[in-house]
Structures are given as structure tokens and as C-alpha cells.
Image (cartoon, rainbow, N blue to C red; front, side):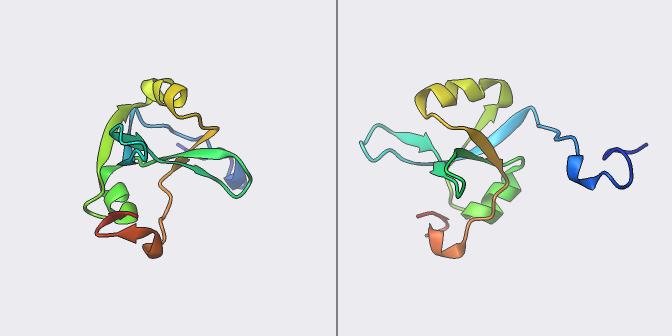
Length: 104
């Protein structure tokens, strides 16, 4: 059984999206609670930061990072409140972007 298609077809792998995602949260600058992290990407699109496992979120963002568990089917609810173009899965966050075990 092959998960990636033909042997030479490594660039066109099927993406398996999990049923739930872990979203890091940051404080709303307007004081209305917490928000998911949406960042402008190098190509100009806006990406929602999401992790496929809690340990990946903790390793990338810090052990003290606030987070929420979101069913993938609920992504449109987040998009309505915080517009984004793509979901950025399991991104590494540079240490200089973290403070006190969380995103800074």
C-alpha cells in the first residue's frame, strides 16, 4: 500500500487533514478576550496558525502557550471572525518570537 502515490511522485502527496486542530491563542489588543493567530505570510496571504497535535504546538510555541481545540469543520466560524486565506500547519516559531513559554 502506498500513501504518496507513485514512487517518483513525492511533490504531489495527498494532504490528510485531521478532524481537530490545536490553535494557539493571543490576547485581543482591544481587550475582548483571546484570538487565534492569523499572520501575514511572505507571499502576502494571511495564514491561520494551526497544529495537528498538542505536543507540536507546545514544542513550536512554548509550554505556556494558551490554545483551543477546534474541530476542522468549524474553521469557517474562525474565518468569519478573523479572515484568513490558508491554514498554516505545524509551523516552527523562532525562539525570538516567544516570551515566557508562549508567543510574544
